[in-house]
Image (cartoon, rainbow, N blue to C red; front, top):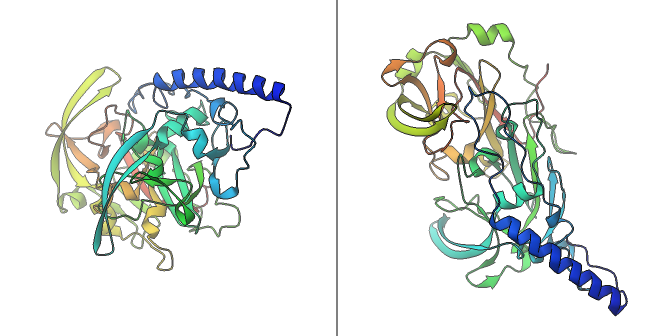
Length: 389
């Protein structure tokens, strides 16, 4: 995708056009019935990894423009990282998919802006390109995140789990049109459009790169590592844990007890989600993840604009199960998701393998991000080095 066919005879051009129409038609049929990145994810206690997503050679082959028009670098966004089909993405290619429109409002400085945008869900592009998953790691997609980079180097992180329709289900669009006009100049070729954010810092214009990474990815080429490598949690520590370690890119790392959390503002939430044995309905009591991170003070670089949007939390359970929550998702000015660290379930303290803490993600249709036996919250940056073994 993004590469024009070279000049040929009219006969060859006709054959190529016919083949492209056939392939595009099949892809559009596939898009109409496309499922989410994985089959409904199992909860953390369910056995086995989820299946891999559908791969889509469509993005890189079938949707290649058939004209001899040149495509400049400013018209292309590069899809890279842990995808089965990396490569260039053009607006012309994305327009072959069913588009969506959204009306979004957000604050920039002291002023509010309201726009109507048209584009394709980011999740659709990623799932059709195929996320590269390790079949040995349970729900490996939840350890992955997307780094979106603009022309000026500005970066925003979005957890893959926040995009999955079975989980966070955030309808973020890769938009090529705003208020009826195609993006132009520094805003082209695509922008990220996120509904319901109060501030506009995640509404990136002039996208150049979309990179899928995971918690084991090294820092980007040429980037200085942020922080020191963290050790993996040892099995003895997992089994014996009665505290929650809050660590990584925080100024005041600490081990927190249930009593510590009970001193913070807490709330109860009623949730329903699909578990390994069917629909589960529970009442959890706990503290918002955002409140806990405020207690330990996330370390931010004053020289990096909106540095918090480059960071995420890696939540780890006693059994080594991991999931990523990006900081933008829980920030009141952005996603404002009421994700909790709970110590009570249905009026009883969490205990045994499930306790004393559990990550609770209200609104998820499936329980894969409900990390039982939560043992560590590690704040990481897009350029944090991978763990040491």
